[in-house]
Figure 1 (cartoon, one colour):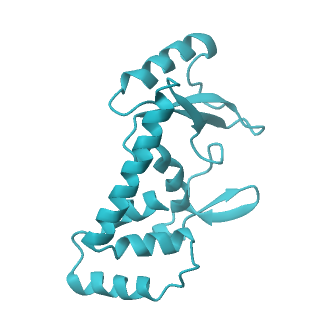
Figure 2 (cartoon, one colour; figure 1 turned 30 degrees about the vertical axis):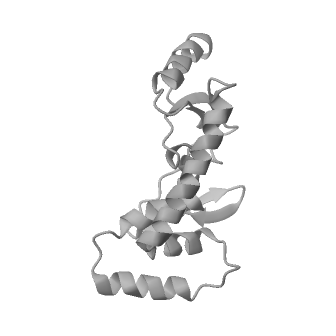
Length: 171
């Protein structure tokens, strides 16, 4: 949620003041129990400078945790998204685009949270192929390295490519 709030706080920086105030009013009307991604996006769009500073301080705590982890490990391997490759939804209204995950439809933008694990604390990440789904679609993983050490995940990709090969287009 922290990533979502920080990401969307920047998306409205040039909105007219009236639109920003409307977003703040809508965010203030949310139930404190509403921890949905839609609520996080709305709360982020209504961030005050004070809200952003608090969120940025929380980001620093995440960075500290990552520094501790990377004192023992060179990289983290994790899924890129919860789904293999999927057919593109070309609906011109972005908010109406959907993606299927295990038979449940989710808003397309919910996929952004997966990038946030590396992006929110500012860590370098590299995506590599890891195989195919039962339908033959590409499945990948993300290699995350220590802050300011972009060459670490890139080198790991080079080594893995020698062992498992590189991308192969679906047939």
